[in-house]
Image (tube, rainbow, N blue to C red; front, side, top):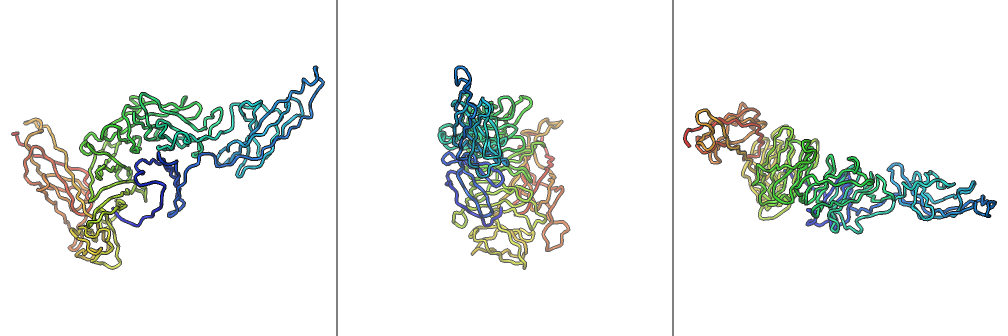
Length: 601
């Protein structure tokens, strides 16, 4: 992990509220949802220019104003018997909306205006005029006959329109202003799906789901009758109260509720529209808690509402639906009695799910589904990890952490970033926590600027050499050597223990529970240095570290097979420990063990 100066800005939220906040991002805009705050939009206008604004739902284009109707009725034929029956004037009421072609957005209706005329007679007409709306490219005109519903009668690019008895299309009405959160309260779950902004879970309607108009994220307006691209409002109703804890877009939009995941699907197809309204179909009986799920490949990682495991949800062709699996079943001790407070996925370079446990430790899950390679590792640091996220940078995912540390008797919070693994020379690597890196023009022995580690015992890597057990005094350490490229930070230990080996023998059958002893072992490594191996932590052995490197230079990294002889320890099972206590890289790909099996038990 490395340290650097950070940019800070104020937000509408308190620190205690962040755990309950949901978010979704579209380029430089992020929508934030919290039960105690209106939907908020965070916008990045520059590296040091960020704004927060409550979302006002509705179209951004204004409606036309000053609508007026001029009645023209030269034909009032009175020749019919009885007199005047041929002229039968009826009131027509009009509204006009504005359209912006670049976005397809339609404004709300203008104020209404009426005219009474018999448009069925020749030469009679109603002429509409209005004041232009700023930014409008064209206008839509709607009419209502005798107080009935409004229906579309035509479009125009002008600010005038003539109605000479145009038929009214009652299947196409003007948008009506609608903000569901005025009555339901603030939503606390948010996502994008099929060009809509979906929001869910308010205090008054925990099972409610609302979606914006299509391709118009901040507009909840609807028409009468409903159109396919209108805003959507539904509620998930099943056997229990189904509070929607999160919304997850995959092949379908999944509503993850406390009673199980539900798939939202269109009434007649997979496409979700306002008319006909969508359906909510339960996919599993496993409830989901409030921790925001992760989407990795085609699987959804989530924490159950009841239980301590980590589960996935993915589509299964065998059942033609979504199936849930426990991916923590082989490491239950990592989670039993703990909660996961935050997590993030680093796709590159090693496909790792980093999690933050309630005690501040980090179980990490390596996931390569197509190779069927996965497993958990427990990561600890000299402090308490409080939050985590990943950000793509220069072709890899960099993991950021908020860590609470006590250094030199002083408690501080650090924003730390895991170091890049794309180094070319070991002197540029960083396998230390809360570290700081330097490149000096002139080799130096005293490294300063380490006030954040004042009083701590640290390690360093200096031009490829490991320097251990240094104490930071007055913000500086003495390396004991001169170096140009130096990284100083808190040390940690990397430890691998292989699983017990069970094999079948012709003479003794299964080796399970028989006395075993490790013989020679072969360890396949990549760019590795400074490791120890052994059958027990107090019986560790370091393979030959130096090859043909000139004296005075750092040992080269090893890639290939390491042959190691282990101490003669007899036990009920043969396991191998591999450890690195130095600030140096260790990558182990394969371990070959040939145990010695005794006949007795």
